[in-house]
Amino acid sequence: MSGKVCVGAIAGAFGVQGEVRLKSFTAEAADIASYGPLSTEDGARQFTITINRPVAGGLSANLSGVSTREQAEALRGVTLWAAREALPSLPDDEFYHADLIGLEVVDTGGRVLGRVKAIYDHGAGDILEVAGPQSLLLPFTRAVVPTVDLAAGRIVADPPGSDE
Image 1: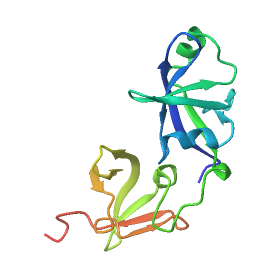
Image 2 (image 1 turned 60 degrees about the vertical axis):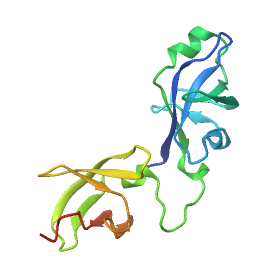
Image 3 (image 1 turned 180 degrees about the vertical axis):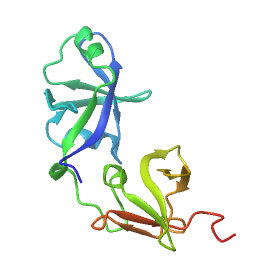
Image 4 (image 1 turned 60 degrees about the horizontal axis):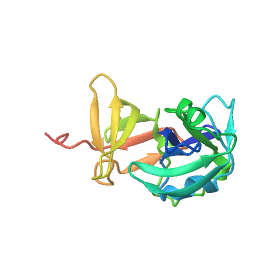
């Protein structure tokens, strides 16, 4: 588990007064502003965020130190990172995506399937992409992924069709 977690990204400028269109990766979109100053991935810049209103594709927000459309547009694609300790604790059966990426995935018999490469959410629930000898996409449900052991750095999965 790293010391910071990606909580959003800047989608571009919004308006002419330095506002940005912000994509929030938090459970409640507006909570992104409550995690203290957010930094760029490399830590070179920090921003305090003020949410203005919901807009198509995200939130309209002001970032400290950004006052013109040109400055806002120059930040397009920049990811925003929060210190892990600023994030709320999660219940035992919930996980930050950042904690799952890189975990080893084994089947119920202990055979290594690969490592979690990415997590996708297309609206019907999370999907784990497992990179290994054979790429797999696994629904992140209790039936398919009965065990996540962060301390051991592994996930036990029971992929659909593995009984055959």
